Length: 275
Image 1: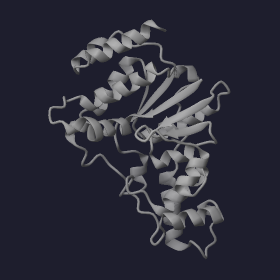
Image 2 (image 1 turned 90 degrees about the vertical axis):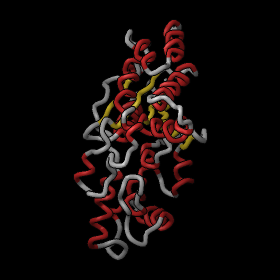
Image 3 (image 1 turned 135 degrees about the vertical axis):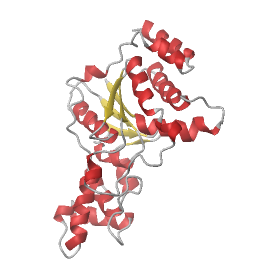
Image 4 (image 1 turned 45 degrees about the horizontal axis):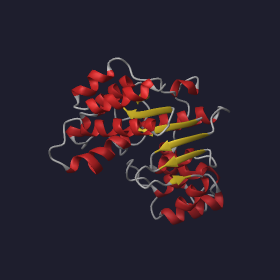
């Protein structure tokens, strides 16, 4: 079986800014409808096991570790108003959904990938997000990242080609070079190329000689590595069969109609009849 893991927060942003919101007439739940349509399209394409991770709130335990870490401040109100409705509609659609609070959606994706990859019945795990954080989860060509926008698939070789480091060393790479999207700056005077060179030469930051990284910069780098390291211990499911789509709940049709997507409900009903 192939496991499909979707970054619901990324997809919501993608539909809100990149696809749906170019039209001023876009309905209040246009981005939600876009994400649901994407999931339905995957089911129509033959996907059987799907899990969607969302940020129920933006803040996480990482905000307690670094004051500059990303928050929900500045998110467009019209976008923020669609976060929780998306979760409710996904659940009504019958899709395994993980709304994260203490952890982030990325942690859920990493945990789900770890759990699924440990099951011998699983042929491949596809993580649907271009987020560089998730590159650390890639394993050979069995656990891969899929960029829906470009259509590219990033396996182990793809991660090396993109970042210059192996997947396991992505947290060290990000700790040194920084991640503006997540709100930590990296180490002064260390850019992406230098970070990749140092990591591939010395390995994890903990193994760096003091002549390369010492004092406050070393402590800062280790803190940033903690921020960049995704958790894989979220207890999301006991069996990958929990991700198998078995049809919508009875409430989905009415819920879809309330956001003006009766056609979406019809597509889901058609799929359910084939189960």
